[in-house]
Each structure stands twice: as C-alpha cells, then as structure tokens.
Length: 218
Image 1 (cartoon, rainbow, N blue to C red):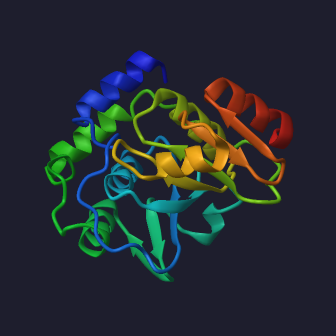
Image 2: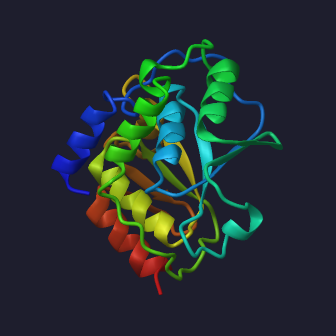
C-alpha cells in the first residue's frame, strides 16, 4: 500500500490505530493473535490493540498457510489471552477494552455494519495472495509500530505472507514504548524491526524487508 493509500485508509477509520486511548490493567499472561493483514475484521482488533497500548504475539495465517492455520480453523481473527480462546472481532474488542481499558469501545469500533464497511474499505488495497515459503527465525522478532504507518504495513505484509511470527510492540502516539525503544537502541525512529537472533536493528520498510528477505526468504 502506498503512503497515499495508507493515509486514505487511516482517514476512513478516523485515525484509529495510530494513537493510544484509555488504558487499564496490563495483561498478566501472553496475548496471541491469529490473523492476516488483509482481513478487515483483523484490522479492527489491531486498532484496538494500539488504542489499549497492548503488546501481542502475532501468528500470521494467510490463505494457504501451513504454519499456524492448521492450529486454528477459520474464520479469523482469533485471540488467545492467557490460555483463553476468543473468536469474532467484536467479541475480541469488547474483551480487550473491558479487561485492559476503561470498558468503553472507541466510536469507530462500535458502529456495527459501518465499522465493518469502513474497515473493509481500508483493507481493500492490500494483497490477498497465498502463503510464501520462508525460514522461521531462531528467536522472535520485535516490531515497534502502529497500525496506520504505510512502512509498518509493508513490513507486516512481508511477515504475514511468509507466516513469520513476531512480537508486535504497538507504539501509537502517546505510548511509553517509544521511550523504551530509544533507551534500548539509542534511536526512537519508527517503524523499528529488532532481530535479536541476528543482532540486527533496522528502521524503515526498505531496510527491514531487505533484511527479512536476505535472512528468512527462500
């Protein structure tokens, strides 16, 4: 998706996915999301995760995928919260805001069919190709990014198509994780892809995708 397309998609979704909103208690266990990038229902959950400033282990399930799809029968998204499996985007969003927010679902996520329509329009330009073979990293990757960045989306698309799991450190405006990133690496630029297994810290889509393709592509 181009920068212009990403900007249009963000406008259609009222900017949701780019900023932190009302947060509450933090998870005591791991959040795991089974999803794929081009799915409009998955986008709704990703937006909620940024709003709540929650980190999540992403397990991409593109069409034709064999790495994670066999574990979970479609439809997607599916969230595992400390061992509890939750299905259906609206149920997942409600669960997240009640447990980790102030209990109020953001307006852009509670407009019923209009929410689905706008999320679908925002996802319209994304490729829907089938899974591509790859090598899995020895250690989990970390991606510091929000939902709305065109560059972050390019990185997520590459990871999704190749079924590579990663830790998404959601980093919308207002997130303290930007300061954490600067403290850890000396730089606060986003999106940031950290590959601890390779000792690599890359910024921007071009450098990140080049590293991923060189290291894990086939």
